[in-house]
Length: 365
Image (cartoon, rainbow, N blue to C red; front, side, top):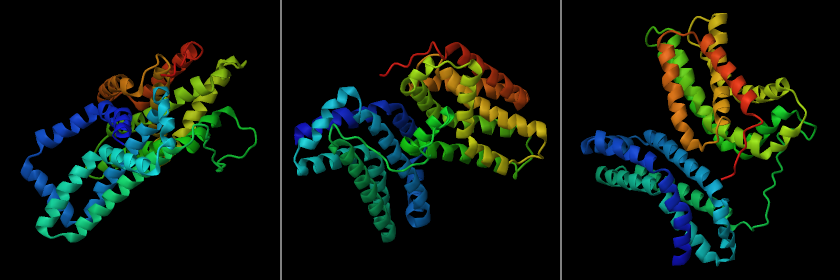
């Protein structure tokens, strides 16, 4: 039992905390360096005194659980972790105990804060909040353990085959290949990305109800929103240059190639475009509407173009993303119209695709 726990902890738990050390360090810096102990107690007391407010906390915990799951899926299937396929040979008791302990270890930040809230609730007599917190912890940890059990307990030769047919079995145009893949295999990533983007767009639009702002605020909001497609674009690079690498041998013109890429991206950003049009806060003019939509589209295409310039991990790409935000924000502050920004970024994307499509080779890590 100790050996099994040691292996799972080294392969999954410790690796997770190492890869997210910067994230947890930032959270710890904010919680310890900027918030006083009395303020922690005040926030905790407000949460336990208002059960409805706890649901906002539960949403954060669910997001954290999804983050852990998104880490576990590729980590379990790494080549260096192939030996985890022998997990199904263990006894049932050892399998269940090991995944529960590993799940508890992965959810330690959430469990500790829940314990803090439960102590406050006991001192103040809010027993319904205690029950709610306990149920939330049990459900989330159990869900994580069940997911981990299913992933580790599958036989090495098993293939996951879905019966859901999102698109008919007729011949599909190439620009739908990746969209079908995302909806079948990366639906959590897709939904979380769209939720973030639409929330930023709606939040920025609502600011116009409190004061008079020009187009620059909305352009900045669109910039911060549409870079939320970075994870989907990173997955698109992997799909197009690893799973569909044989397509490079097809006799197609650059026009047909770029049309396929940009149609795929255009379909992927339909949800945020609909939200942007629905909550557009200014007096609608053709130039501004076209400009803001072109700008959002071009930001997404620019992410793809920069990712095929040189292969980088998603975490390493954040440096380039930071400079995109800084440079673009600087130009927005100097009132560069989104039509100009969108046109320039789209042309840069076209050039990068033209130069790098056939030269770029995706190396599986």
